Length: 293
Image (cartoon, rainbow, N blue to C red; front, side, top):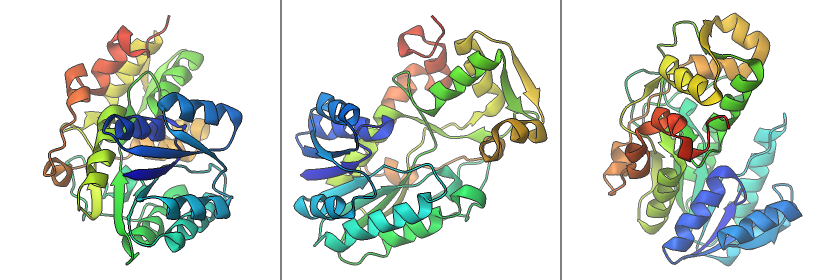
């Protein structure tokens, strides 16, 4: 297959590029700078200069191959509008093929028990646009539409967990919210990339959760983050966390446990993460690159 990836220089997108190339596919990756181009080339993919505002580039590249994997996102207040315009441009240019978009665990109902894909909610705040983003792809009648909802993604010493470790190191403490009993699903980035590859190669449609079997309590996760950062671990209130981190605190205080039965039915298994002992094992393993020098 010939696949165009937005966000190909990023944490998830670059892992998907490597997984697809290893399985014999051709990959073109969107790159917005010289640094991004170098990262895409390092994966073995062909860089395409542009960003999510270049609708002409997005349309051209989406139409040129067999499918699109959309992992890129902006971070400003225009995130929802930018995503809508970019995805619409790509879908409108395609004549068949497959389109995979990436949303996130908050689209599933908040629960400490893993929930299936149909058990959804419309998250408020800065992520409320995710419902429309999913519908845009699933409602396209001329492509095979897929949605992947990753939970907390870890691995290769990078990703959001690395930022949590860096934040704890800078603050001199790792803090979970309230009693830390809320649970999040997790997935290793290499296992997540394999999920995208398998979905592209299948005839599947719809929404898929990519998650390890056992959600992790936040108290356990931040204990491992504290170990990696070399700092003590303590609790703080949701109000204190919101004052320091804004809306992000609300997400870390929620439950986001995902059931990946649909994906496992395609033969997917999170083998890399399980071999490491999950996210806490990865954080405590010096070879994984999270621990302080």
